[in-house]
Image (cartoon, rainbow, N blue to C red; front, side, top):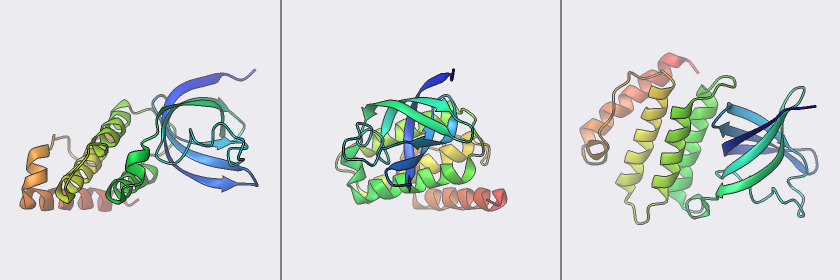
Length: 185
């Protein structure tokens, strides 16, 4: 009998598999970054179809198969539909999630990274943000992820300073780019 893992997850992305299934890229609270097969999720009758869309946050039940995790059930925590249709929000999520997919190796839980995702999604829901606010949020999220993964020196960046001080933003961008370059990923 297989052990069922119950965990929270963000759907970072997905790709079709076969006629009616998908492989989901999930960042989970207990397992870290995993790839999970969702059988029949692309069928119109699938109950998981709307719960496990890209950029969603859900409670999932997973079973470890021979080569890949399998989603057995899921329930929504938050759909974030309002932010996935807003261009700046969607771009920020794509950058943050792409960074995670690029830098996180193997299945290893990292509660700090999970909480950064929770915070980033929540802040993207705040209405009437300026382009400077979006830029600051993206810079802070990326910097915090790099710090949590050990690619940047652990210093807390001042959110207010990042949103108002252009020189500070440029310094932070330079630090991020140097860290990514040094990682050779």
